[in-house]
Length: 163
Image: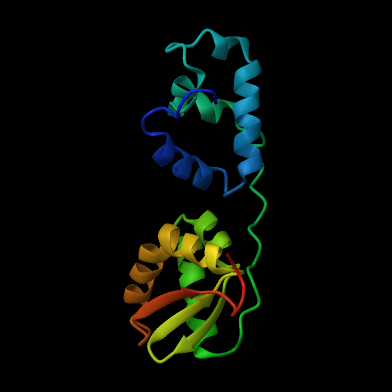
């Protein structure tokens, strides 16, 4: 979009993504169908994004509404350790709680334990910093919910990797 997203876009996007089973391609197809629809062009307000996020509008353009969404991937193979079980429980709950995108992104990290701290290894230091900023509080809340003795999380990078 050449203009900034309309108010409420981020919250709408998260809800819409859940409604289409986490399938961003279906959401993108709805946007394209909307932009090509004569009915949609006549909608007010004039800003297409503002009009599109209204519930009675965007859902009308979601392809394959009669077919179930493709199932999400089962997830990564985790080690049969306390770190792997804890991390698997966090990822499973995030997916079930309507946050499949977060679970999908976080599944790229490798878990390990240092005492009561879950170490999540990102590909590099920049990635570790990004995961901390984007998902640190979410992961901490999930760990507190689990109450399995793991009380903290630290995002790490392999030695010598990153800027």
